[in-house]
Length: 147
Figure 1 (tube, rainbow, N blue to C red):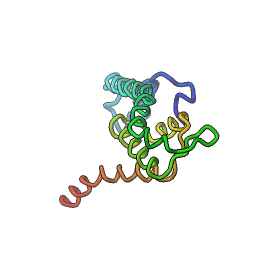
Figure 2 (cartoon, helix red, strand yellow):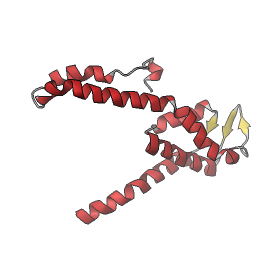
Figure 3 (cartoon, helix red, strand yellow):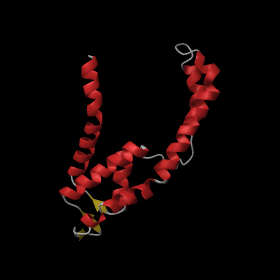
Figure 4 (cartoon, rainbow, N blue to C red):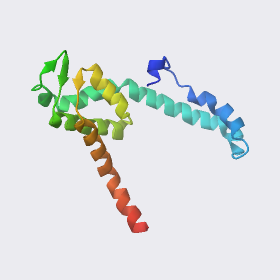
């Protein structure tokens, strides 16, 4: 569930820094002295993420536009476009780009597709995971060389 669904549309985590500094004072005594700085960093990150989520529909529509011609061949069933394997893979790769470039979680993209009445199959998540694995591959090679 998204915070928007809970009616939370403003940053709030930064407000918890004071309580966190109190609770974690023993293992991290410097938190108390740096709580304003930490709260500001968290507030900035929250604002950036809220802005990204606010533009997620536009970004998703842009990604869908790249595969729109492939979507047009699929029938509408009860108002939904039910796409096949190729389109699901293309949309899964698009979901990965949104995640990798903008930090938009897969769940948000999936919800956006639902709102746009686009139903994907299991190839959607398979393609997303494949792109994620490809991205991690160079780091695995480096770790093996160092290990």
